[in-house]
Length: 129
Image 1 (cartoon, rainbow, N blue to C red):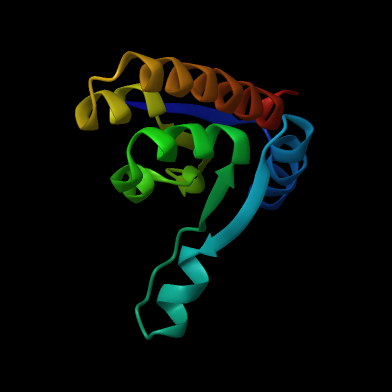
Image 2: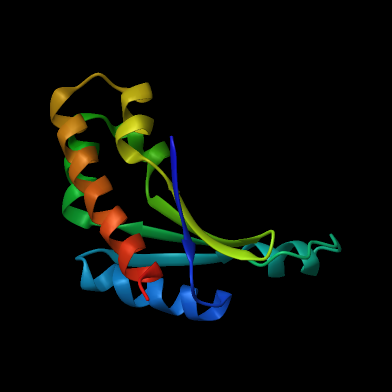
């Protein structure tokens, strides 16, 4: 259910490459959650770097919401960049699998598959050498 790729780049470079890949693939970057920074600011000693990128294609989001407004709970899509065992990892929950749990609508499945392919392309561009 989770796709992940190991980046050959350092954490900051990986984050910048993802920031660049999002609009290059027709998506918008809505927000970046700095999990490491937020937890440490709240007094929790959390060492690994971790950022969650909220990404969205407005046209695709509108298609999903036109069918089922309650699927707003599954939006926007997220791509995480984090440190694990000395590596920098880029990962996402597969939209096709997440949506299949929430709906059996065939049109929504098609949207999720298209979005997933684009998100995989963003991840590939982020971790390419």
